[in-house]
Structures are given as C-alpha cells and as structure tokens.
Image (cartoon, rainbow, N blue to C red):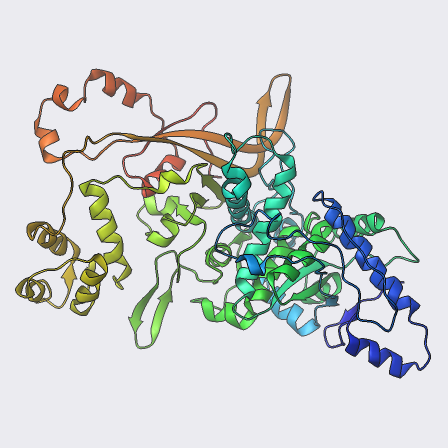
Length: 573
C-alpha cells in the first residue's frame, strides 16, 4: 500500500530520512524504499511522455544518494522565453519532483476559510470542485480552456491569458506565419509554462513554491505508472472539498525551491489538474506559494472570503494574484494613501499580461497603466459576473503613433503614477520636480511655483504649460492615419452554438477587426469634410461597425476604436 508522509516528517528520498529509517530498524531491507523511488520515476516518465520527450531513469544501491529522475525539458526546449524566469531558473536535466506530503490540518482549515469563508453553499462548493483544465474539442476552440460552471473563471481566465502569452510569443511561435494555426502539441506545453510562471512568481520572493496535488487513491503492489495516473485522475473526478478537514484528506503539497522543481511537480500533478479539482488545486498552490500571511497583508479587507458570496464568483484579488503575484483588490497603479497610516493597494509593478474591464466604461473605476499596457498584448477582461480573455497575435498593437494625442497620453501616464488621489487629476507640488525629471522636460522656476501655488498641480494646467513652453514637440507633417489591427476574444464558458447538422456546446472564439482613427483637431472640425477625407463613403463605412460590451472594453484601451466581426456578437457573460 502506498503511503505519504505528513508535513512534519523528514522528506523521503533524502539521506536524513534514510538514516532515521535505518536507525529505527537496524539491518532492515531497503528494497521497499528503492521500489518507491522507482515508482516515482515511472510516474514522472509517464508525465514526460505527454510532452513527447523520452525520460531517463537511473539505478543505484540503497546506500547511495537517491538517483536522478526523468529528464525534464531544459531552457532550450521550453517555450518559456520571457524575462519572467531567467534561463538559469529553467528546469535542468535530472530534476525530480519534490516529495508529496500531506497538508497539515491547521493550514488546510485556514486555507479553506480564506477561500470560501464559513458559509459557502453546497452549490458554490460544487461548481468550484467540478472545474478542471481541458482544452476545446474542435480545431477552432482547441487553444481555449473550457469552463463548465460559473465562478472559477477567475482562475481559468488568467491561466488562459498566460498560456496565450507563451503560445503566441515564444521563440517557436515568432517563426510562424499563423500563430493561431492548429498546434495541439504546443497547447499543454504552454499551459504548463503558464502555471509555472504563476506559481513560482508567487513563491520566488519567499524562495519556496508549494504545488498542491491530488492525493492518488491507494493502490496495492507494483502498479504501472499509467494506471497510477488514471487512478489519481479518477479519485478526484467526483471529489468535493467541503471543509478544511476534507482538504487535508484529499490533497498534498510538493515544496519546490526553484522553477525547475515547480515544473517537475506540475508534470507529476497533471492528472489532478485535469480532474474536477484542477482550478482549486492551482488556486491553493498560488495562495500557499505567496504565503497565507502574505496574502492577508496584500488585501485591503482580509476578513471576507476570496470567493465572493452568494454566487461563488472569484474576487479581483484572485485575478490580481495571477497577474502581479500580489492579492491586491484594486486595479490602479501603486497605492493610494488615505492618511493616518491607511492606504488602498494597487498593482505594484509592471505585469506580463493585463486587465480591462467593462466597469471602467461605466465610469465605476479606472484601470491603471500597468494593467492596460502589459508587456504582451493579452488581457483578462472583466464584466459584472465573468472573466474572459482578449489578445492580439502581434505585439505591434502596443505601439503608439507619434502624434500629439499619443504624446499627451504618455505624459499623462507618468502624471497618473504620481497621482495618489485615486484618479482625481492632480498631484502634490513636491511630485512635480521628479515628474519633469522622468519626462526629461523643464519649466521656468516661476511657472513651477505658479503651478503649485494652490497646494496641488492640476493635470490640465501642467499640460497647457508644457505646450506653451514648447516642451512638447510633435511632428505635424506626418499624415495621420487610421490604425487597423485584429484582436481575438476567448470566452471559455460553454454555450450553445449551431453548426451545420447539429447543435453543440462550446467556447466562443471571436475575431474582431479594429480600426482606430486619428483624433480630430480643431482645424479638422472647421474644415470641409472633403478636405479631411471624412466624406460620405467613410460615413457609410462607419455605419457598418458594430457595438457590444466588448467594444466598450476595447475603447478603454484604444479610444474611438471601431470594431467589426463575423457571426455572433462576442459575449462577456
């Protein structure tokens, strides 16, 4: 019968644990321990075969250092190519997954309460315990992570966004003419890299990440590794975590000290991640890797659960944990000081993938520049009750044109980073000098004094002063043109979709053609339409553009954007 150590026992497979066992049982036969190691190697090898690379195993005597495990993809074969994890942190050959240990009861109870609180309904628990990771079944939806129930989209959408980042902007993808071409072999690889980036990003600061895995059903004898993987998947398929005690019984953790060990642990845990508890296992991994105390310090209100009542929706704190590795509740840049030692915490650093929300188009909040302009053109999109994903296949959509509007936007972004009023449009006089220094601009001393004479520096006054002082220079000879590009929207929740001959349920994929015309100047408004190209033909073309809530989200990133698509309107619910 297979056994698993508790969190306070020495790690199996280490010399320390081996000596304890030898001392406790002088002259005992270590063949059982060798068999257990061999079994772990076989299971890891099976995981490796999923990614098309042969594993390597080695044999050694019971008195030697534990053998190295299967060969895990190195930095040369991994598609993890961004600056998030450096090459020396990628998985070296011979790394094996850390030992699986049972999560102690006290931590399990605290973790469960942090996520679900004390009053989670059976319906909420059920929808969170029936959401694994699987891709769409058709060629069109093959890159889409499928959502079965409401609620876990706050986990699936960020993982989808990070998966797309690795799928579209890896070294291999950059060589492809059609980045969305059907590449089944690349989807799971990108997905594992996404999970690696998210989990290790939360644990790197502490020097340890915890990968939460399903505890496989106990088996007798020398069971084949493929059967063990199937047993692990089946044992979790109908499981429901309803309390801290059941969490303690059903899952274990692997403690990883570097990115390589995180990857090896994830490869071991794939059956559990594909089971109904998959989304929860990843969320638990993120929280434990960040540290439960660290999560509570990140939050503005640490009293409420992360899964909100009464419908079990994922909070913004969960989404932000994936995006910036901090469980902050807000989407503006930096922190807002409320005085008397109180502050609201926002996004602390630049992010890899971003966030847009329908709430901004309704003027209920303002998303900061860090989330609107991430390193890669991939965004989680929030509506009143659901998260989906919007992305571009070309990084060039992030580039701004060289015109006065773009220059004003860039200047305003630097201004907003120093605006601690929560978007009020003003900064303190003390912040003006470092702002000008960052922009490499100067103003006469008397103008600086005048701008701060009222105790605040208002944006409109500063912008006008910069233009008057000829600090903002724009090449007006360039022809202002409409920018055109394509965005793609993934909504992972399964919806009824009619195809010839049958009705199926599948995720929604929408290709959106976007046109962003230049901003009209006062001269444009006064000149005849024919002189500016705003003729009847263009007016007719404008009437053919479409409206939907997604378009409102797009316009929070690109003002005046006009969108068109073929087929059903993209859904944000």
